[in-house]
Length: 227
Image (cartoon, rainbow, N blue to C red; front, side):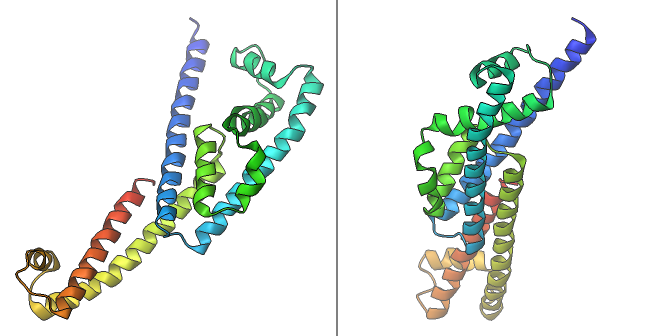
């Protein structure tokens, strides 16, 4: 096999490897945000951003409906046949073909196969959780782009920063109790849960703060998996 062919094949393998990693990141971030939405922990910024992402996907879909017939007419072949010829390497690499393939991926390779074309408009007005379910479906079909990936990353980072702020406040509250009673919070919580310290109001509040801190800490670790 000629060197240029080997190099081209290696280049394609690297590209596919990058695509897999890219899609895994997108899926992971969407799943994390979906979990936050399930718990009712998303804010207005997230709701607006997810709504905008959905609007962009609908716009891409509408544009693909308009552009695909134009390409088919210009090159005198159906989009399905074009895609097969492109995959077999029977067509030269051209900007027009890359654009055509991109539009086909949005329509033929994504939304229509998911069977959700008739409800695109309705989903726009639904809850964030359902919108994220829709975007997860698109991601699994491979129809998302780098802009969405970056937007989702920023949203996850936003919640990580929120966790840091909450943990800083909780740490200060815990430190006040630790100073007052001369023991660290982890040891206190163990003793409290064992029933050795009684049920004084201070101890109930301290235990509650410690639980909140640990939950926030766990949420942060979960979110960091999406970066």
